[in-house]
Length: 200
Image (cartoon, rainbow, N blue to C red; front, side, top):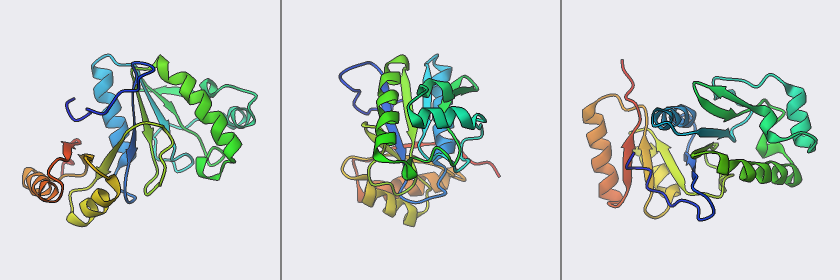
């Protein structure tokens, strides 16, 4: 998958990155699942860490609220709330486990446990809420956008130098070509990949 040319951490072989968006409703969670599925086809062991917890965006729910409470209290490991969906390991939750609402201590505990889990996987993807200033995972970011020009401009303003974009919700080849041309006119060095086309 040539567009995932992000730098690997030096401490282990795992490929880690944040999927980010400059605005909501561009399909970050869809892209996370789609991308994870591509790696699974290559026999990679993949973990999605859903930092948009409580929003119901991953179509599998952890039903054990008690386990979530124990993780937050530090009396149970993060592994207790890992479940598998189509050969993809997922950490998700409910409104109880909303990273934006957690104390710094609770966030630090979860981040520490996640760091310990990472070497067990080939790929770790963090599904990040729109417009978050500091992604949860200490790793490069890949930005998801729709092909309309206003969304692209917002994304490029947030993405920084030498961004990597995934175009989602592309309706046809002409829309894709127009979006790619527009992006390269603004930031020529942008790496671009298209997610699965939406069929009418």
